[in-house]
Image (cartoon, rainbow, N blue to C red; front, side):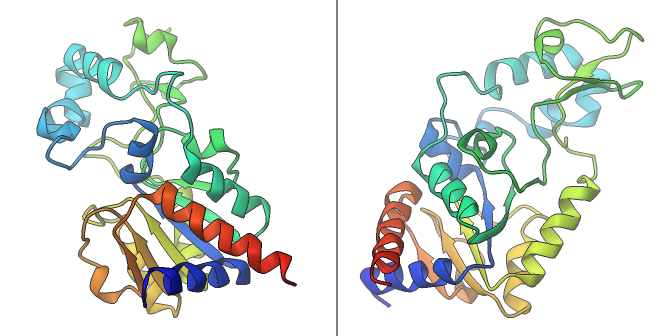
Length: 248
């Protein structure tokens, strides 16, 4: 289908409801954050196993903390973009069942999304690697402080060498297996096991939509593939969706 047909088709799918969303770093880059796996991404500058692994926390903590402090904390100047806001708007309108995200920046929540499964955790809460105590602020970690037990503080993200959290995985499994439409925003779909969910949705009978600037390994099974900016494309879909509602 051509561009206009794709916009109209997707607007009708969203309006029908029971939509699950899957977001990756490509959505957050439109807010000004750096991605991970592109030629100019974070992993082009640093070895993730050296800087972002459980081993780094245990044996290279100063460099681990410096890396996160400088590269991954989201400054207040970074705001949810139009893509985040439209996704939150669709959730409020009850078109979406939930948002599955690989992102750790919580921009979905700041935009107003409530049903969010953070597969890779997030920067908050900070926790103690030794005793597991949770801290609601990141000041202690950023300032190089230790837990009251003497343990090292770390962000609540999933590091290399750790398992994904059970509750977000269960939510992602439920949403992807039961949805009618599954939309991927800004993910390369190369990271396992997160990239299992788009394929599961397709196998369970959902229509699969992939909106990403670059090609992905799952483009060949998708019902609609869009290589365009997320915010600009969603704006067009949202206009078509509102137009369809007004015609009722």
